[in-house]
Length: 221
Image (tube, rainbow, N blue to C red; front, top):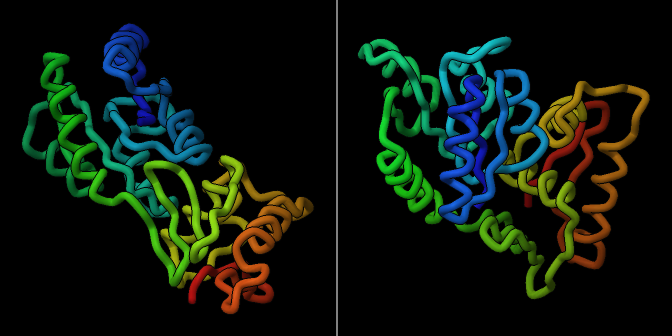
């Protein structure tokens, strides 16, 4: 399980990282809102622990962007030094799944993490027609055929499948999968889409990845 801890107090972040790794989780840390967004664009996580009081971009804005423009469905546990009802409501309304008020016992945080991960485990796969993406094993199948994917191809396919039926621009795809502003002179999105087409659609009776001329791409049956 891959977790992201977003906490600007490095001692607290280090404490959480060490404790969670001792429980068998793999943990990345981000120390401000911009870094958190970069991490979230760069790779998929199973759970995010997010402090609300962050420099550069505050936690609520990180949450809004993650749930909105990035279409992130990963569970988010919010940490806040505030305990007012208003702050809790803002966090939950912005897309948080649970919250903890500082200071807290690590055992309580661990219990919340386990509960959120159990809930996420119910979503073990994404499916569009006969294309199945196993989110736990991180494998793909088209019909009876296993599809070997690189980490970046997996992230791209997951994004396309989560937004199945929508037309996604090259800008949206580049920002979400590569975590960067779109350079109109680069063809990286087209190159990776072509990789996926060869692995998923080539030889299949029905094509799933479609080009929308002048706009971008869409995955649908």
